[in-house]
Amino acid sequence: MPNQPTTSSWLFPPATQEVQFDEKWSFVAKKEKHCDPTNPDDDRCGDCWDHVALDPEHRLVVSAVVGKRTYENARQVVYEFRERTDGRFINLMTSDEYSAYTGAIAEVYAEPELSPPGSSPAAPKEVEERVPEWLVYATVHKTRVQNRVVKVEARLVFGTLLSLAAALVCSVLRWVNTVFVERSHGSDRLRNSRKVRKTYRFSKDWGVHEAVSYFTLYSSNFCWSVRTLREEVTAKRYRQRTPAMAAGLADHVWSLEEWLLFPSNSRYKLPLFSPN
Image: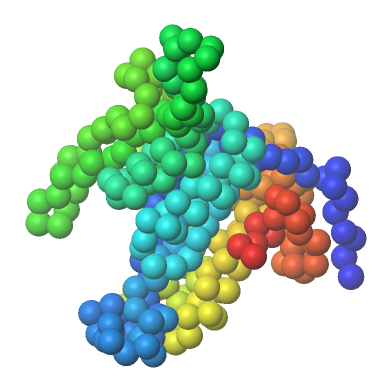
């Protein structure tokens, strides 16, 4: 058995300052268009989506929810992200124009506010919820011609133009984008052959598909070093780092055996980040 890392070898929460939300498509048994909504056997077949919240600076998958493309699953991935970052200030949130994220972010990050502010002390106060002033959320609008992206525009949803400009100063690429989470999707398809497009290796069982999806998404945080995260030690010598190392959750590249045997924290679900 390998030496077990102690709690001092990683810190929580991750040093996340920015997040990108997106979904990755795959299917189980057969594609959605071939499913019969009146057949109970097809309830766990068809399109399956990985809802992912990615820290673009550290390439860390902070939360993931595997299932149908629904508002409930979009809300769950936002909720888990908020819990795993202790609900603290996040410089910038971005996603594509999937409308579920707007409602999910507004619901999960809403703060109570007493209203009306000028009412007398004797008057009953009603509690309203509002999006905090610090929250900056923007979406990426893509214009396509013959299925090719020809133009990309940023659209501000929550926050002000001034707060967005301030957030972009500290952003990884300094413009509103989802390129890091989309690149993460491509890497995960390489690790999980069930999701390779146009193949016979697709999943045949929904439960197995979920399990393997969580396995590849979360194990990559600790066991997969990323070339662009490496640190230069001396000339032509580099220290390889995983997303967990870059985010302050680990001090070395973990083996799969280490990761699988490490007892997950019951509150924060670390380091496994397991969904259950």
